[in-house]
Image: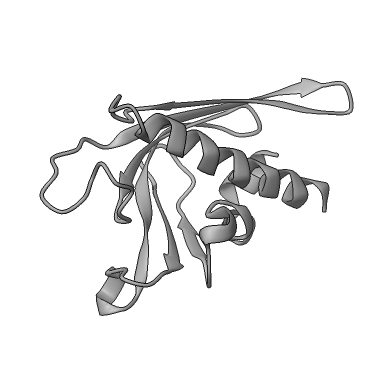
Length: 138
């Protein structure tokens, strides 16, 4: 399970769920290391092409146990639309043995409480986690 969050090829298979097209990821897996995950989308802005994505810095890396990282959206997720002042978000993912598998706990902080963004993220994360389950099962 930890590898699915840290291997660039695995990340590219699930992180953008059905929104992802030609997804690529870069990972420098160490405290203070950076990651970038981009997808080809209409209207994106990465390197002057139709790319959009997210990036951040790892703030805690405990192999097979815990990941903590910041998240900066280069993609338009609504509340960060042109001109909107938003702070980076943070994610914490923990992993623990659970029978023959792994129990993952996911915490995402920093989504504005505007009455719609939390629910929209919840739906997107649920779809991504369905794809994550497929990657882990392979």
